[in-house]
Length: 73
Image 1 (cartoon, one colour):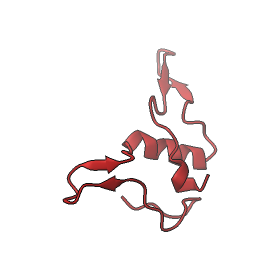
Image 2: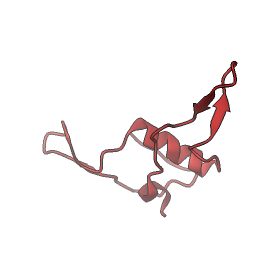
Image 3: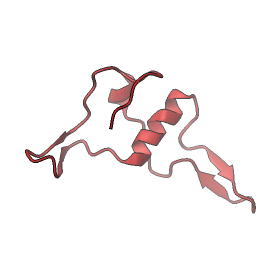
Image 4: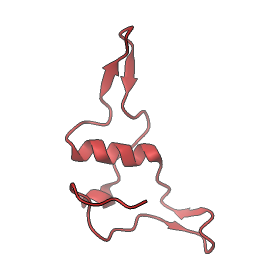
């Protein structure tokens, strides 16, 4: 995946895969982690909840964590 602009550190590689690129070898990153990072860059806490039509909380990301290496922190 390529990300650029908006506060993303240029030229950053996060993690590593095996020699064939089939399996994660170091620092697995989930789609929720990428989403949490994007929310962070927009100033929205990734733990924010919004109510559904019945008032129940829906989390923007339940387990996503900001990828510090992508934002240079």
